Length: 235
Ligand SMILES: NC(=O)c1ccc[n+]([C@@H]2O[C@H](COP(=O)([O-])OP(=O)(O)OC[C@H]3O[C@@H](n4cnc5c(N)ncnc54)[C@H](OP(=O)(O)O)[C@@H]3O)[C@@H](O)[C@H]2O)c1
Image (cartoon, rainbow, N blue to C red):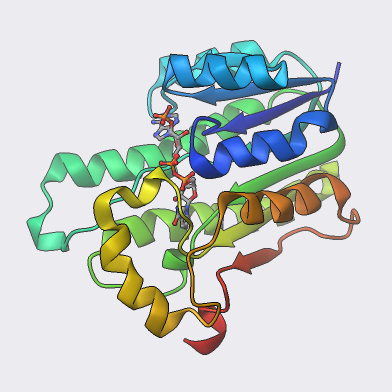
């Protein structure tokens, strides 16, 4: 039975991706940390909720155990923000950011690549424009996102012989809980730096993720599609 997996399905972007892809696998595994939110989404989409912290080995094992065989596609949409100057961060905050955004996902992917994959064999990683730009107060977050983007690009080459496509969708500033109470502070930045003149919506990312994951030609691998209202184009 073909399985689609969304990691970070309780998030703004992850939930939108799950809704956009719900009809694209025989079963859909929804994972994140918040049990209630997961169960609500699983009811809505007739998916399977797996509450798991992928920064821990127990969490990664729980996702792998629920996956079964025959992974059709996986969308990696989990992550935490960190928006303060490096000198103000303590060691634990820095380690948590790398564990959550880079090390945990890397170890989870390693685990899931041991499963058989089946058509359309697609891994889509949600990156960030913070991976490719120098942004103050985002050095650690940007490093974690640059790391996961580079992992994805390298995996595109490594996994091409086995037919698994790996692509990156890199959002700009998207209106989700990820922004926390920083939305007002972002307004000036968005007005000055985003040609579209507004925040993006999670559904706009999900439409691109759906295309890249299940609709794109099999030749599309190793790509990075930036969905940011034009911000990178004018950087
Ligand atoms: N929003 C933006 O402006 C923006 C811009 C560029 C890139 N991104 C990237 O887009 C992705 C999704 O962001 P979002 O805006 O949807 O954020 P969000 O609404 O805060 O969602 C984050 C998701 O990640 C999950 N998560 C966090 N830590 C986890 C862990 N240790 N184990 C398992 N799941 C974990 C959360 O699960 P729980 O809530 O259940 O804990 C939630 O499902 C992230 O990778 C982020 O870096 C976002």
